[in-house]
Image (cartoon, rainbow, N blue to C red; front, side):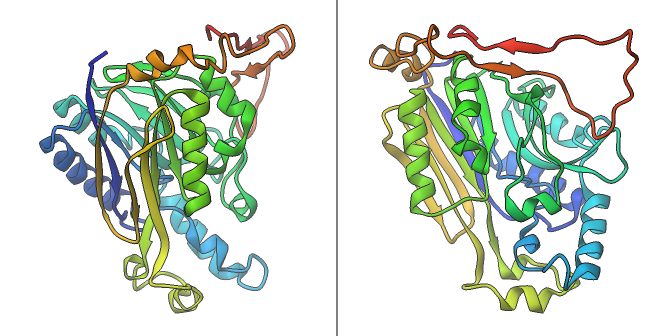
Length: 330
C-alpha cells in the first residue's frame, strides 16, 4: 500500500439518459484525473446515465405516461455489466493504472425490465472487483430500482488500499456500515445524491466511527444539463428551487473526522486530495469499531452473500448456504 495517494472525486454532469455519451464523458474525466496524478477516481451515484431526479418531481399516477416514457429511456440506456457495456471505461482505467469506483444504473441479467442502483469498483488492471447493489431504494426511488442484496457488501484489496463503499442513505444503515468496518477498511467510498450540512456531518461521523478515510462523491446537476427533449422538461425545471437540481457537496474526510477537501457545492469540478491510507490503521488503537472496541460476545452480525435475482428458478438438489458471519477479522 502506498504511503500517499491522490484521490479525485468527479463532480461533473453525465449526458442525461445517454449511456454511450456518458461513458465517453467518463473516459475524458479519467484522462483529466490521471494527468493530475490521481490514483483513485470516484464518481457519483448512478453517474451512468444519470440519477433519476425526475422521480421526485413527476407524480407516478397523475403523470404516468411521462414516467413511462422516461423509464423506457432509462432502461434503454442503463448498463449491462455482463454484456460488456463498461469495457471502454475498463480499458481506459487499465491504460492509466487507476482504481475507479463509479455508480451506474444496472440492467438485471435475469429480468428485461428491472434496474438496480449499483456501485462498481474497477481495479487498476481494468478488472471489475465488486458490484454492490443498493439494498433499499429510498422513498420514490422504489419506483425506479429493484432492491439489491448483500452479495456486494465487500471490501476489496486494491493498489491504493482496502476499499469498500455504500450508496446514499445506505450510509444511515448502521449494520451495513459495520459489515464493511469488520472487513478492514482504508478508504470508505460514498456515492450519493444526498447533500447539505447534515449529510456532510454524517460523512464526518462515519470517518470517526470507521477510523478510515471517507471519499464522498455527490451528484451535481444544473437545470441546463437537462436535455431539451426530456419529457415534461419545463414542468420539472419549473419546480426547482434554484438553477441547481442538486448541489453536489463532494467531500474528503480524514479518519479523525476532519474535512480535508470540499465541500464542492453548486459547481462542477474535480475535487482532489492527497491522503495517507495507512492512517486508517494507525488510528485504530484509539477505537476499532469491529475489533477491540466491539463485543462479539454480545453482538452477532451475519451477512447473506447470495446474489438475489429478480426471478429465480432453483433446482431443489442445487442449493447452498451463502450466509457469512462477519467477525472482527472479516
